[in-house]
Length: 191
Image (cartoon, rainbow, N blue to C red; front, side):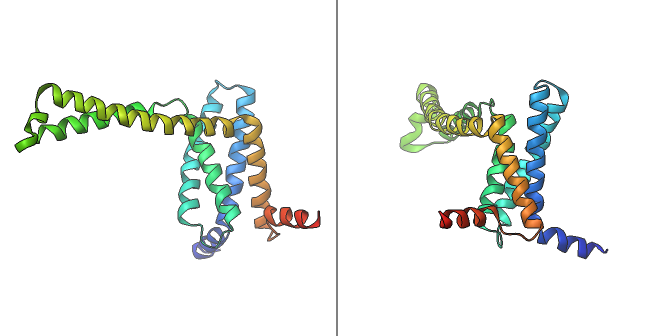
């Protein structure tokens, strides 16, 4: 088999391959978490999930043409869940607030004319702190909201269910069978 043929096979089944990979890594994370949540294999599986999560979100956002909406949403959701797991305790809001304060302090230093009073001393410091506080409040809210969703989706029973759905959907797509969403709609229409 030449490389063009292999590329065509992978490209034609990309959504199925991504879902199978997401499901298998989710199973691996759950298995290692239940076995030893402080062990090296668990941390390695989380790292693999983090890298795969980035890839899943990238492909889910950029390569979704031809995929069903359910498949694209499942790939992006799986990517988010795998990506957010190691980042649950990183204080992004604080880091962004410090950057905003520093940027505002530098920006205010370049003011001249009528606004020159803001470029010196206490007004410059106070405005920088106020901007940092506003940025912190907004991004802290978004961070906590993201962490809440991440913690809910990353508890191991939900991660196991999501991994199962990914593996089933990926297997169905590889077998050219109808999607899970089609089975759901058929069941819903019968009842």
